[in-house]
Image (cartoon, rainbow, N blue to C red; front, side, top):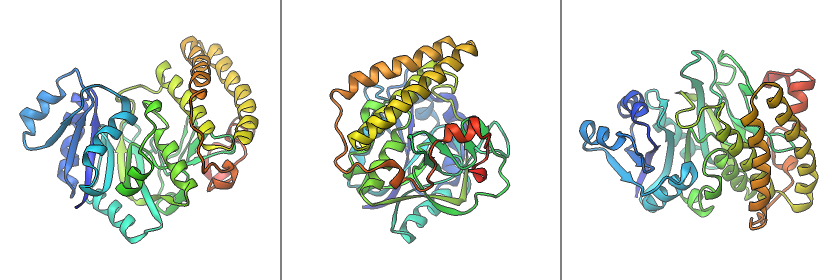
Length: 333
């Protein structure tokens, strides 16, 4: 069995591959595998013409980030000790992959790890997806060191440390293959967005830990498949977060939190309306409707624990802290 493989899931990402794949191939120690999620652009032609020796796995249909990775990592099961998941729009630095795997090898209490993730577009600032490590508040809203809602911190080495976190970013994360397989990978129903948070929650409920390792740095473009302002992204984020809460919380605990979430999500929809973002507002209500449909057939996590008891940093409501108490920085929480 080989030590690790870098797996890049591509969907219509020809331009991303042209821009970012060279740095990955130049700075990576472990083999790179491209998993193509039934692209309809010239991604496969580009790879065949420019990287004929690169291993490319072709999936028959686009099943999203969650389903795509599940399918390809099932094919790789038993061949690697670790999987390194990397978005196609990430720029890496020398020895990045080896350092992540070395960290997991030297710290066996952790089974997944992410690096510091900075922005490609906003030079010197953290990236929206993962930043300096991910957390969940008492109501299940995700936030990061270096990024709370739309407030992005400038990188001044304040998060060059190593800490336990609630979740690691799917933009760039290394995970022990045995653990990924044991927990049956990502939840296919998510399609995209928050599937890594759900997986980390399930992993941590079983007693494992996940980490942020600030000695390794990568840069992420973001929005390569769906822009942050996309109504589809809004729908997936709100719906998937509710699915995650329902499947991972004890039922009585979920019911209490869901009542509050309905109020806060309705408030978010109203804010979108005042901002003239009618489609985003509608997407929130569609998310709740679809969640109710899925909830009827959803499995509840048999290891579900109270969220506040499992979160590394205990914050009652990041919404309250951010919008009411005006705390925009992680250090202020």
